[in-house]
Length: 129
Ligand code: SF4
Ligand code: SF4
Image (cartoon, rainbow, N blue to C red):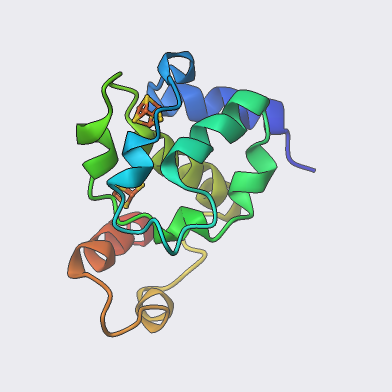
């Protein structure tokens, strides 16, 4: 059984994000190129974490649909950095599984041909030692 309270603290600590600064304007999500694909949009990551609902994010495919383009970070008028938060939630999902839980070949097989190379490079960084 995962300790979500501990994970919430860890996510906030790793990301350095102060979710209390978010004014829920939605500009981060409006600028997100993955908006249509993401079950939970950037501003919703903040809402879920403010509620303490880490489980909903850890189980969501939205975690893996973020391209790490940082558009949401640039557009945020309150310097909240939603991408940093998403990256920290990814780490919280990956770490309990061990660093080698996917091979490079398995990661590559999960990619559609039209996915951006930036996402592939980011995935290699995450899954390779
Ligand atoms: S970093 Fe991720 S969440 Fe932020 S705008 Fe880019 S794809 Fe969307
Ligand atoms: S742009 Fe910034 S302040 Fe607005 S909803 Fe997104 S994180 Fe919150």
